[in-house]
Image (cartoon, rainbow, N blue to C red; front, side, top):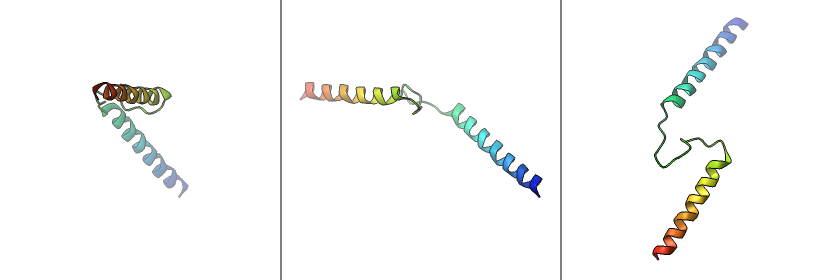
Length: 63
């Protein structure tokens, strides 16, 4: 009985890994996203803040 449970857990884990690897390899980054969709570092947050500040400045110049 324990062997069957271990085999089922192994199959589920293997399927999850294959799914995650597939998603990682087939993910297409958007042209506006320099990080390719990654949210794992502070650089992305800084880029978003900088981009927002630049857009605010552009808006102020237009108005």
